Length: 202
Image 1 (cartoon, rainbow, N blue to C red):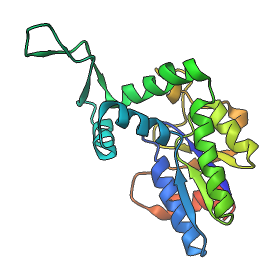
Image 2: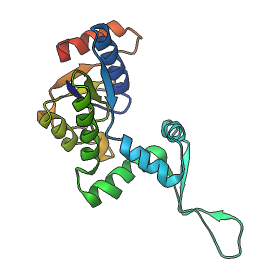
Image 3: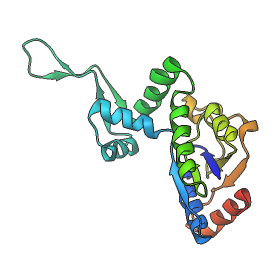
């Protein structure tokens, strides 16, 4: 089984993935998390000399800024910086404007799907779960491999086409298999589990 999860930032896609894995484990089955962003993050870490842990920590902090264009003027010791950017903004623009718009819309998609297909070839009974489906071509690739795509709806509601960045605007509705409600934050996993089971037919 191949599953894609989409939704607003903070909707709880990672939590839904964790619950799917737990529900599958209860049935003696295996669920594995995948991410279209993994190759992107590996590339950013290599480019800026960061560890994956540092990248994830910076991503969670809107106050942590990455220095862009550091350089020294001739004869000066002080490092000058041309600009600042949050890690989340960097990942969005590095992935979209610097790669997808240069090398083609399927650049990251092809890498991500290839990893999932290779995994399925070795472990055909495992369920692959993508937790970061943000673009139509990512959803389409999952559907073409026989998978399903669900929107995780948190307390703030479904994705909005008016979001500032393309990666947060949501998918075409016809690419969605259904929705998983995660609109309660009371710690009651039974509610979320019930919604997951209903959506996935577990």
